[in-house]
Length: 295
Image (cartoon, rainbow, N blue to C red; front, top):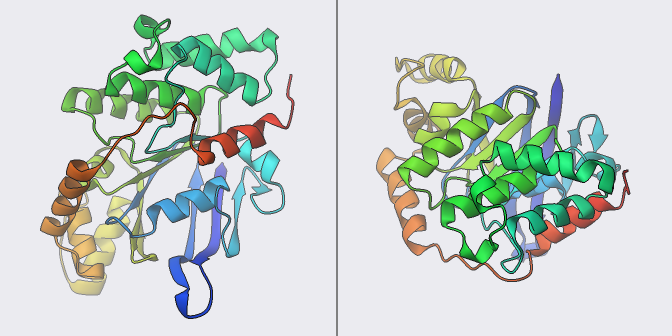
């Protein structure tokens, strides 16, 4: 079943000579049961595409359909089916984990009769039992990421958007997070936005490769390997750890070293700020979903 259809979307910022391109002519579909990667260097257009899908920043042209609902023409219905974990993971530090997740359900319009069941499911899925009563400001990076994932999936969305979910996680936390992403794909379509090609290669079933705002390649690992051979005569095993790196190198001129340096640079320079108020992106998404007043 097709959950997501991205239909030739373009996003531009500014006008005239100052106009900048966020992304151009991006198209793909995502089905339930699949994990799809949006791959590229910093500035490739990954977040622009993700924001267009979520409706946070609507595309300048083209459309996005989620479970048959247009993000342009039926935004409330479309957003009911979306769960988002942003890279900055906006949380209320003064709330306990329980208070924050209940707040999330209330913002989405769920009545008291169903809140506890949904809360219990999300807490169990993300293994938050030990910190259930703790204030969010007391949590480690790994647990904060689990809380962010819990709020993204607590309402059983059909489409889960993950923006650099592995940022700042240690190897043990990353392995645990990968298991949870794989579990999500049993009922939802998952879009993983990342520049970590090794992570995408391990868990994603299909890949969308972006460079300078354009879609340069896409498909399963087998399809990417076939294209490499047809277009460049390069034989690369579909299961190879270097397949995605070589695809970027041939189609975009981006080397493995550049990718790894980009990832290291972002990790070193990233500044985390967990303010008392969630970002406008999260607030807008939750408020929009809450308008439906579902009981």
